[in-house]
Image 1: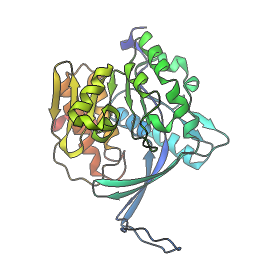
Image 2: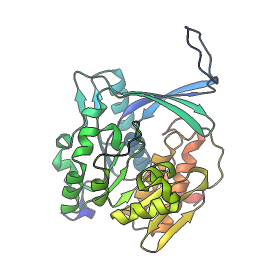
Image 3: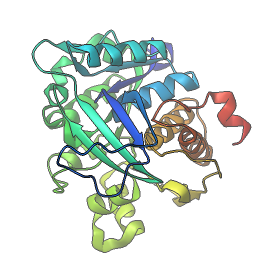
Image 4: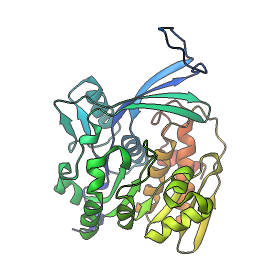
Length: 311
């Protein structure tokens, strides 16, 4: 099948869990059953993959999502919210035993602490991905590599299969909670067309002693295109013509939850619509920046028109 004639532009595979985002958290949490008040809180879509899927659909990409949720109110919340945002969830798996994962995010300006209960999230495996759904997409993306060990173990094979049927591939590994940065990641990167680390992740994966540019060059040498999220400093990529950098626009930031996922959604929109690398980066940085203007990862994700208006 010609990729341009497929049912979906983008298939996203990975983590899906509600986020409880709290602002104004007191410094130094008190135990001993002391009730402390925060400025505000929000229940919203969480999980890097789920947030990206919402951002891509908001931009106009025909988007499907595969992940595992529990047979509980949190799982139903996720499926309902994804569906309301135009994401096809027909390929999702409902675990009848384990609960849906949950995350609490404590926001302090541009920084945040993240507390996650994985629940059924790590049960996701490659053979749970419907092959008809995979082959119905133009591009496949996955997130949170280190939280999905069963899936990560066979991701290189899944990406090879995707390439064989005409799909392109991308990965946002996110951080490694164990701090080891090991496993089959390098093998997966050889089968990954676009890789979306932030600066800290790029350093840990490419080699901290090399400095950021050296680490990004080392990642590029594996055979992928590293597109590095640099927060308020914008972004950079290391392609065939060397480094390219773009700044971030100035916005009224509320929090940065999910900004990297909205960034990646913008880049993938550009790539799937034949933008050149610089324009892909500019759209990505714009989408990521605009998404920070409301609490949580999805509330301020822009439409394509909103993003292009300030590109």
